[in-house]
Length: 416
Image (cartoon, rainbow, N blue to C red):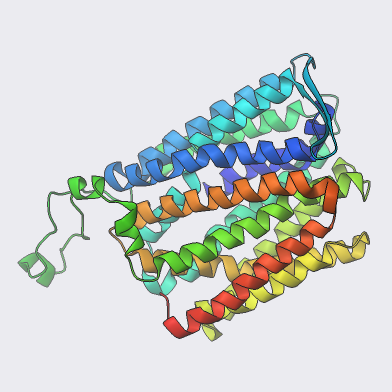
C-alpha cells in the first residue's frame, strides 16, 4: 500500500515544475504549491493521528486515500482549463509570475490532498502496532524501501508516458488509477491493527495471560481524547527527537523545492532527464534502505546510524551546488546513503520513544512538525532561489550537519 501511494505521487513529480512554469508560475509559486500541501497537512495530520488511536488505523487510512483520489481528479481538471491571467507580478524580491486559473485549481488540489494527508504518519503508527521493538528499525527500512520503489518506477514511467500526445494528462490519469488501487487494497487486504478498544486495560495478572491468551493492551477511548500536547511533550526525550525530526524536514525541503528549478533553469534538463534522475535516486535509496541498512543494523545501533547517515547526507547537499552531471549523480549516491541509514533509524527511535499508548498521537504531532518545517523550507527555498541559486544547497548542508552534531547527544542520553 505504501508503494502504491508513493507511486501515484512520483509519477507526477518529474513534470510538476514544468507544469507550474507553463501555467505562469516561478520558483516561488512552485515552493508555495508545495507549502500549501504542508499547511493543510499541518491541520489534518494530528487530527487523523488521534482518530487512528480512537477508531483504528484502517478507517483513517481509507479516508486519507479517498482525499488523495479526489485531489488527483481536481488536478486533472486543471490541465484542461484555459490559461487566463488573473494577476501578474513583477518584483525584484518575488520574481516575475502570473497567477492563472489552472494554477489556482492546482492549489485547491494540493490543499485537499494535504488536509487528508495523514496517511504517512498513520501508516507509521500501523507499522509500529504490528512490530516489536527489536525489528522496528528493519521494518521501517522496509517501509522506506517500498516508498523508494515507487520513486524508481514512477519517474521513469512518467518520462515515457509524458512524451505521448496526451502529455501531462496521462501520468495524472495513472495517478488516479493507482489511488483507486490503493483504496481497494485498504478495503480488501489491510486488517485492522488495533482491533479492540476497551474501557480499561486488561489485568496484568489474569489467568488469560498465564495460558498465553492475553490480549494486547488496549486503551480507554476517553483518555485518548484528552491527550494534550503538554502531555506528549512531557514524555522523556520526545521534544529532542521531534526537534531532530523538524530539522531534517527543513533541510530536505530547502533542497526539494530548489533542485527541480535548478535542474530545469541552470542545467537545462528536460522531462526525460528529471525522470531518469529521480528513478536512479529512488533505486539508490531502495538499495541503501534495504540490504545495506539490514547489514548495518546488525553491527551498529540506530543512534550510530543516525550519526553516520546525517554526516554523509550533509556532504551530499554540498555536491549539489555543482553543474556537472556526474557530480550531481554522485550527490544522489551520497544522499541515498545518508538518508537510507539515517531516516528509518529516526523513525524507529521516535516510535520507541512514543510507546504504544500515544503512538498515533505522537506520529500525528510529528507529521505536523514535519509540515511546519516543510512550509518554511518550501517557501524560503522558492523565495530565496533568485537571490542565492545553488547556495540554497549549502543551507541544507548546514542544517543537516547540525542534526549530525545534535545526534551525538543521542549517544549520551540513550534515546529509544
